[in-house]
Length: 482
Image (cartoon, one colour):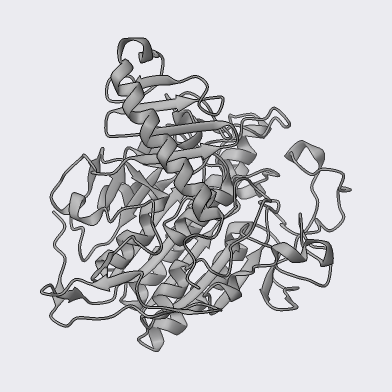
C-alpha cells in the first residue's frame, strides 16, 4: 500500500523557461495538503530488452541490484517507452508529452524546443538541485566543433543542451559511446562504429557546460564513468539538505557494446558476444547498486524515489553479433510498435512510501513521469494550455487499480498504435490497415482479432486519428504561450 504523507500548505507552480514564465500549467490542489519534497532519480538504460533482467525471468544475466529493487518496490509488468527508439522516449520523460508534439520523431531528429517545459525546469522552480548524467540525445551540445552525430556549426539549429533545459549540473554526451573505454573506437565486432577507425577517438565527447569538454577519468566501464559524477552531485545536495532531481541515462547496452574482463568473466561458459552484452548489463547493475549504497550512507535512501526503465526494446538490426538482447515473450524489437519494441523492464523504489514489494499490471508510460512526479508535489494539470499525454499514476497505485482512465498513444514513422487497458490497435502503414490485439489474453500479439471486433477498431481508430491531429497542431506551435 502506498501511503503518501502530506503537509497542509498550498503551493503555486512557477516554472522559469528560457523565454517565459509559466504559472498555469499545473495548479495546486487546494483543500489537499502536499508532501515533503522527495529526492527523485530517473535511471534509463539504452536498448535494454524486457527480458534482459533477472526480475523479468532472465536466468543468465546477473542483475542483483535491479532484482532487489523490484523486490523492495513496485515492478511494472506493463511499462511502455513512449517510442520504439531513444530520442522520442527521452523527450517524453522530460515533458509528459509525446515528442510528435514538438518534432523529436526519431533518433537524431529535432531537439528540445525552448518553449517546452521540462521536468528539470519544473522541479528547479520548486527548489530542487538538478543534474543530468549520461546520454542526452535531445539536441546538440556544442556550436563550435564537430561532436557526435550533429554537434558543431552545421547542427546549430538543433543546439539544445541539458544546461539550457533546466539542469544545474551536467556530464552529458549528445548520443552513443562505447560501453567500455567510451572515448575510444573499438573493433568492428562491437557493432555500430560507422566509418570510424578502431583505436582512434570515438568522436563523441562528455560535456559539463558551454565549451566545457571533459578530459579526465574516462577509461574503463562507461557506467562507472557516469556514476563517478553522479555520486558527488548527490553528496553535495544531501550535505546542503537540498532536494535533488537526478537523471542518469546510461549508454548500456547500446552498440558499440563491450564489457571489461572482470565482467566478461562472470559468464565463462558463454560466447564472447554474450559475455560482452551480458557483462555490460551487470556492470551497469553494479553501479546502480553503488548509487543505492551511497543513498543509504547519506541517510536519504528512504525519501528518494528511484525509477528505472529502458528507452525501447532490444536492438534488432543484424549489424553486429553483439545484439544479444531479449524482448522476452513479446513480438518485435527496437523500431517496432509491437510489444517487444516498446514494453520495457521497469521498477520504482521509494522506501518511505512503498514499504512492500509488489507487481502491477497497470499500463504505465514514460509520458507519465512528468504528471506523476508533479502530482506527488501536490499539483494537478489543467491540460488546456499545454496538454500532456501522460497521467498521474500514483492514485492508481495507491488504490491498487490496474486500469487507467486514458489510453496510451504511439507513433513512430508510419507505425501508429493506441492502447487501452485490454486492447491494442496497431497500424503498420499510417492508418491504411489495422490490427487489433487483446493484450490481456494475447500479450504476444499472435492473433489479430480486428475482423471480429469492428466496433472496437472503429472506436480506437477514431481516438487515434484525433490524437494524431492534436499532435500536428501542437507541432505547429498551438500550445506555446505568446
